Image (tube, rainbow over all chains, first blue to last red; front, side):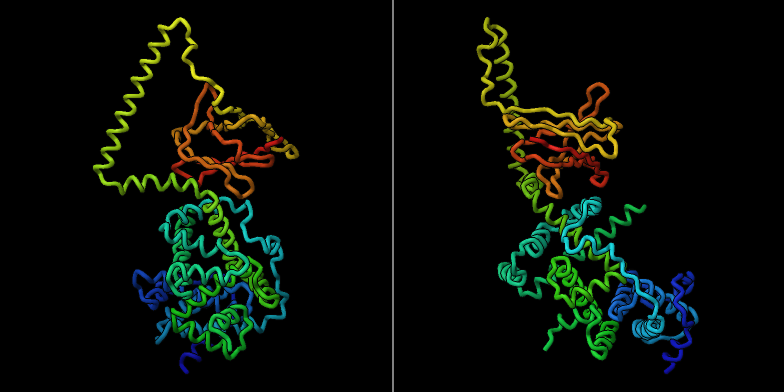
Length: 202
Length: 266
């Protein structure tokens, strides 16, 4: 009950502008655990919020996720006691979604230019630099992982499902294990690309 | 009966009935395992979209989501980049033998490596001695060309110079190179301007569209007079008429790649 009350007190406006202060951000990090993995927890919570707003078919789910985190940080800096940060974040997210649904009469813009390249499965030449960086990250993977990704994504004939069943059989693992291995290898690539992004921006 | 994967897919597309979706919301925020499963299913969804494997309804829903979410667009773009890099790596697989060689040598026992070094040293010494003897024989002979080997079996090479200073208008195209049918090697000299300072070791690739048709690592830089260039010996059997791009970068910094387009004509 206390939670519901506190959520409804939050200003009902999505400003699209970050108004987080260093103090409130510090409160949020403390609530998320204040451990070396706190960055991961923060990104995980943000990702969950993006999934939530996406499934609600709301525009700019990333901005809405940030708005929830701002409000959450603000509430935490006011000293409110929260049993579960994630459950509280979901409460705020529902509230923000409700606000957005009330404004849905506005026309929704779809970036049509994005679909010019669909359904081409390869990147355009303008992505050359990114491809080069991705190649570097692929080279950093263990050779077994790079082979696994090639087998999983490139050896697709007409029947992708059957091709992957065969791959799992050849490797002596279940289809679920195969998917998990592929997922983990791609997570490594994502981490590598993010590090490369940061290096490039420096 | 829907599978969990199908349910997670519908959840992401916003087509799952609200009561079920609300249940997934609650589980998602309470369970990091489910978060990972949803991420995994999103990868699969993006892959199916890119390969055109979604049903019309799924595709329409996915397109709407992409239009509303910059981060989802970014993920789709990133997946295409990933596929391109994977295909390119797969296409240039022969060169990976060269990459594996140092690793192979590394795992050889130190004794065997030492033996190889000694054998190489003796072999090079023997070659030098032979060369000295041959030059002595040739200098004392009255017929200097008597012992010269025949050129019949030598590969015929043709040289093309890609200058860096040729001004090109917006309408003019890349330079054209005509490769004679008798040539077996195209020696492509790519001028670098301004001349790089301190970077003597370069990597180069010849691209036809996105396909890597030729690649070489550790290409030395040549300096003759004012000109600084890379000399690339490319087998003509891997070239046919069409548009190509030479991509080159310092070996120490592959991200600083530069590109030089040209056409091969019959």
